[in-house]
Length: 105
Image 1 (cartoon, rainbow, N blue to C red):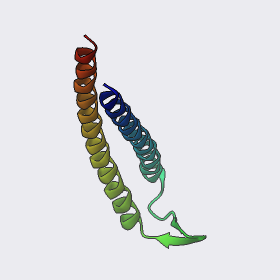
Image 2: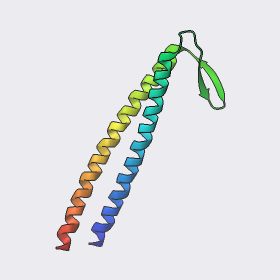
Image 3: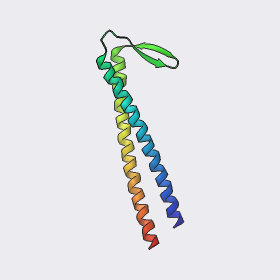
């Protein structure tokens, strides 16, 4: 019984980690969408800079747009992977919960 309880707590901790990771990814997604929206309001000749370390470096419009698109694509893939992991851990948690209930009876 104590083994099942420890297993349950371990899985619950892993689930919480996945949920936190998902929340961070969602924040990054929203930030990058804001950047993407800002690009739409810029004139074609407006300078775009990228922060590299402590230095702002000029970036071509096409490269900046491409970088944000790639970042959004990557973040969306990571969110999907995280959601799959969350679903798997929730299923695992349900199984252990059922085993605990069965052991109590």
